[in-house]
Image 1 (tube, chains in turn cyan, brown):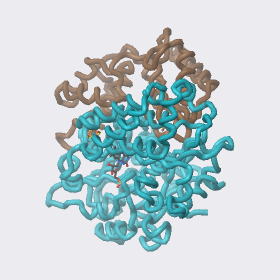
Image 2 (image 1 turned 90 degrees about the horizontal axis):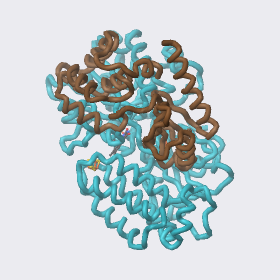
Image 3 (image 1 turned 30 degrees about the horizontal axis):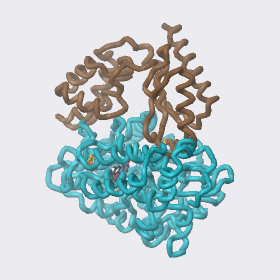
Image 4 (image 1 turned 135 degrees about the horizontal axis):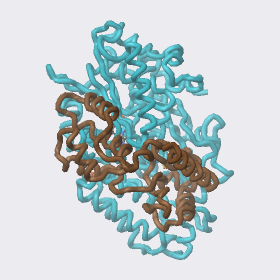
Length: 447
Length: 180
Ligand SMILES: Cc1cc2nc3c(=O)[nH]c(=O)nc-3n(C[C@H](O)[C@H](O)[C@H](O)COP(=O)(O)O)c2cc1C
Ligand code: SF4
Ligand code: FES
């Protein structure tokens, strides 16, 4: 049994309500922080815990907090990134829906650490039903004196609000999110200046993922030393993994970082193997933006070592033979799935979601989508495969935000590991079409 | 959802209750930053005024937020959730992205098309009841295939479940008509 820090009480009935949550140790981190610690001490504790951002990039949370500028007389903001739109990722929804008070508690403790008196949770517009749940929890927290003026008599004030998006993946990128929260189109800003210096309304702002903010609660409760005992040397603590695709038991699991990938896929406690007794073909371990891994690189690395669910082990081998932990969106493919079709599907996603500001991204993503569609439907030729690589190079590194890269890299990885399957679509144009839905048996080619 | 139905023909302005709600949203942001309320207000306006944002509705929102109409058009056209033309009484938005495709979203989309007798995504059934749209990943990847209708997620879809859903929404519509 792995240790649970976020989902410890998930099975308690009524845990979404204030009383039950409070009776199970809820809001203790706020008491501890506001009554016994200075804001700086909270920041230091989070720094010491080595918590890495759970939104995808894995940037150390404590370090980000320490960068926050503190000019006199200028408000500072904490903004929670609840835009969760990376395909394969549904863990933040799970946290907020089932444990809304953990989200609220994390926001209070974190805002106190940063000296923010106003904080926002920016939630994707499609999660309007989750927004209702959060607002109910927030109202309860105000009523019980955890929000508002002079919280616990400490002299610290905090207002917390939830703001919905309108359906745009790009608003998960932190500067696009801030634009959106200011009521504009979600076009990412040039960095620098970073949000820590110039964020919401031009004021110093920290943007953190839902899970990062929730993780602050156990870190303050048990202390950084205890937190560091969980996980691996480079990946401390626990992580939520949202597992989906062709597995027997999809869902959200809290794992101790460092669990083996094999145990996670086949273990009884987690995914329970591939659905319908099929064989594992490929894995995207951290959301659609990270490289796909073929079967032989999933449970072990290219060097033949066991592969673990951690930042360092999943990226072992770099882009040549590794991937990334990313957002924890764990997408499993069985033997019947068509990699070309899936690559095209994701390319269509990025083409649809490009904000259109930079031409390499706007044009490149839709070109990739068109070329991949051609290949997928049996109308492509061999040169198209190399053309994709060329388009990739034109996008990579030439854009304002990382969406361009996020669109390009998975295509490159798919071709790297499954080139034969792309070629097969060119040499078997008629069969390529019949395989469209991935429902037919994989033809006899060596994958 | 029912409230949308009751207000099919409704046009600006908001009722006094809705206006109070909107004022509350504006107050969540600092003085002079009322534009921050725009997305939330557009969602409310869409729900109140017939399920889509007419130019009249957008101009009204601009007035409420004391900003230029163009600022509202800019935003309404950027975000995919907003309907800029009238839709059926219920909009089914089926997720079409990778993880849902792995578990059969394409088949569900085809099934809904044939049930509604429409030839393409984006069309509305002849009786004006359902519009089929597709959406990108809605954060329900482990529970696919799935669709969103209004605020509600319907997950683990099968053809039989789609049949049930259509009956459910038809019944909901009939009872809302009978109430009026
Ligand atoms: C295109 C794009 C989409 C992103 N989407 C999300 C998202 O949905 N949720 C999220 O927390 N971070 C997302 N990020 C990462 C954010 O920019 C930012 O790094 C993150 O919110 C920081 O929080 P963390 O350090 O706690 O992970 C996205 C980044 C990019 C480039
Ligand atoms: S890389 Fe793409 S999504 Fe990012 S700013 Fe440029 S056009 Fe917009
Ligand atoms: S892929 Fe359909 S909800 Fe995520």
